[in-house]
Length: 338
Image (cartoon, rainbow, N blue to C red; front, side, top):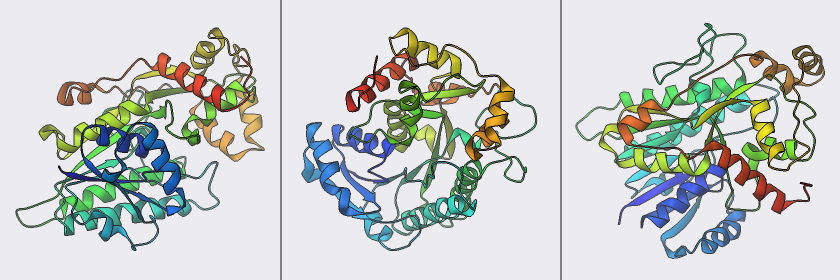
């Protein structure tokens, strides 16, 4: 059976990729920043009924070359899911950008050296939608403008890392070349496979415990983590995926629509009123993340997954069900009144 490396195997998306790959019979390797989480991950996978003899962990960090070649050597495919994430606004934008780009460099360079058939990189809708040209509908042909003064460090990091991946792949010479496919998910939510709800689901938790008194006029695309893992694995082998990027999105909605879904399901701390734009901007005077997100007020962004659906046959589950399943799991993890 073929061997697949999943970088960031302890992460929200990464562990779901490992779970689905093992279910499909692959030999799976995973990288983590520290092997201290080995027992936690093996317990989570054992609870899913997996044979742990088919899963092996390697220690490797996005900021250091050590460990990557050992992890990659002998693999048929690599899913490069690992990515730096800083909650809030980094003090210096390079705190996000440098490890994102260097991680891509280490992984893809090792993949090319060891003749990996294909690498699938987890990018983001963030590398597509910050064009700053008034556009509201986006496709895989669009790229975030990293030179624009309003583009945030996170959006820059995802865009520059993805562009570096394409640069490395396109610079190959010779007949036997490593292929690349890129997945660009929108906001990822859904059930986790460990007790850590993760940063992606934390905004749902904040809503459930009453930390969000009103819904700002924000519009996002959402997708379930299980569907994101599935499109990675499809892109890994599908002949039409080579050399392509794919938006992974289930549906867009305003934040007030999301909070209303939760409130109607019985989570009464989820707000049913909108927050005035001026108040969001006032909060932004004292809170850097709020200031950044205030740039998106009243901005609709549509990122359909038409290409993934037509070329890969990918389908996303109903995002309303994912929202409620996420809330139910979070409630089971902590004391959340319903």
